[in-house]
Image 1: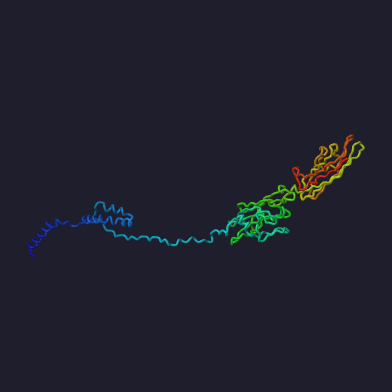
Image 2: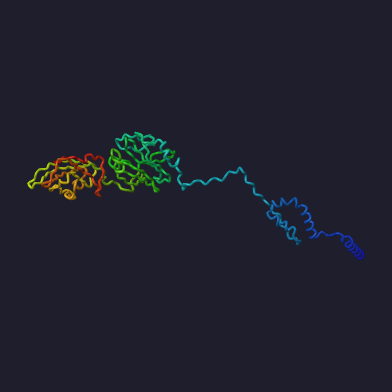
Length: 401
């Protein structure tokens, strides 16, 4: 192509740029952004819900879309969004933690035993004392004291064997008339939930204790029992019985006493003084007075000693003590009026004291014939009078003349 032709062609291109391209806007970066904004506005209503659901930051993107124009940067690849699966309603729950050998021992079936449950169960009691004739096997405890029943007198609960579960403790009496043997028994449950006998805590005997008054299970598992030395009945009031609280613990498969006294002291009421005396016959003495003697015997037929004995002789005041026979008295009988009193020392069980006591009536004093009481009463260590079960034999009537 000649140089002229080249020049002519260049002129044609210049004319084209001046006349045609001036009317056409080349789609540069700004045009691209405007076109994108226009299309975005048209699609906004359709895509807003989807965009909000898919992107937590949709509002931020919307603000950026409407912000000022800026030079386009590198385009990040569209992230892949993976939705978490919706939990299925039929999914199995997580398994519970398994129980290890270090877990606490499971509670025995049925738990602790109530009084009503104990009364409704068939139980076996430890053996009653020999000769009582009381049933022990396959019996039901009774809530009343009918003759021959195993009467549930008292009830308490506590963990007596240290297994973490409360056992039942019962005071039971085999009713025989107004009395009968008694025992405190602990009950537990076996692995099948049945009520079984754990052991006997304490029982009455022919010696001591003869009576059980109350029970109490304390927090450490000790069974406290109030025991009495002598059984009430037969004229013996319950308040005369000496009482002690003794504690018992379950050790080595049985109960053993761990606290409280182990024996009783003498019971001041367990005496039985029996008095006998001869009549008083006064005769004339050389000095004009009249004298005479009586023999008094005091025997203790009880099981315990009388700490002291008060002897009283209800003779007229003109009849005065005389002679050496009064030496056994702790006091001075000559200083007493009517009755004449002689306080004697201890009189042991089964023991007897015999006194020959002299009397004198002064010269010129007349004493007729009459009757007088000779009476002996037990006293305790404080010199207080003590009642005894049978007292008609504490007094005898004599004649004086």
